[in-house]
Length: 388
Length: 229
Image 1 (cartoon, rainbow over the protein chains, first blue to last red):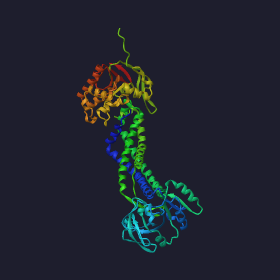
Image 2 (image 1 turned 90 degrees about the vertical axis):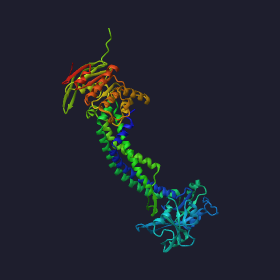
Image 3 (image 1 turned 180 degrees about the vertical axis):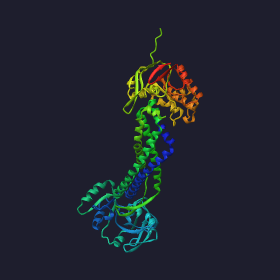
């Protein structure tokens, strides 16, 4: 048995102001680290929740997103008649031919313009996304210049609110309803009648085809068959995978940015921890000599100081996570580079981020505490006892 | 004829010097001494005479340049650093001038420290600690931190820590040097009791003639050489 953990913990408590200041420095780094992960998690969660695993998205081959894609009407008709497409209660195929266009709208705050997705939908579109429900107003009438807006659009963009008018495609479109899409990417979209929108934007082709699989396990064989059919130039993805791919570029960017910041900050925090631990060793030279004289081996001294540094790091980790947890209250909007449109999402904290942050803080403590701990363990007993 | 017991400490031709740059300054030269079991020995001498160095060598926290030290059956001059640490844990109790208690641990926890190096279970450790704290008269101060105790009480806790593993030898470096006369007297009486009642061998470095009077034997060190008075 070595030196009890209470020795390490109580020493930190005894020097609580120094401990708090050092832990705060480390906490700041953990805050940045956790906030970055929470941002990436929030983005991925928002985009992945947007899709349903039973739905399949068909895009033109090599088109990264719906905005870049085009599916000819003839191909759309062929795809509609495939046996894998589920049939709804009304006997119609659960398939929607949608068109996606980007328009520019001004934000309510700051008057800054930003790209917004306009999605031309059919009545089946809503059946394919059961999580979406109309919150206010009504659905657009077929053949009219009416749209419904996602909650995030209604709240943040001029003309997006119920009863307001948005001008695009050389026409004025009245917002007749606001829909609740939870924390999905649809919240940042405006939906209108697909045929009306195709006319307004002079589109000859759909952007994407979305359908529900009759049997979810049939996806792989369906994909293989459709993608090798010489009459078709489409690529099939499960809707969840499609939206996950959408988040990839931005997640990567956020991760790199966050990690660069974290690494730079962590160097400072580790130096802080090292200074604190060197001071702890310098103040306890006689104690170290006494413990060694009593028979504790060098490795016991080493581990006692390393445990102390780990505790220090974990205190920082706890502080950082506590501060970062408040970030969940914040929703931010940014450009989704895959679709070039505005996307709103929240910081999301989960168990994986908690343990990664605590592990990171412990590693910072460990790195900061290793050199001082080695110094403590290598002290000459007689010289240490003379320091009284 | 009664069989004589061998001395517990046997020191032969012991030399120790300290290096200062390229120069070696001799501290102890050719020391030969035997200390019997149950003896209370005072080491006296002027500052720099090497008495603390001799005490450190006997306690196994310093290493000799030449010669041998045998404690009981073990020649400690041949032990490695790790072996010396294990040997100290079971065979030597330390009493320091400034008590050297760990300030963040209670009296109980300070006394328990050496027992953490033994295979004793928690309950057994508690029994041992309570017993020695009773011996030093501090059974009611177990949960006190060193800062909540007087100098004399702290030194008594240190003595309890020194005897908790039941070592044969106690080494004390100026144990009364930081205490007022009354507390010093109490500590010396306690050490005397450890020798007479518990059969401990005590080797004490002191400048204080009153402390030395308690010892059975006073040995003087001067210029690295030992004499008996």
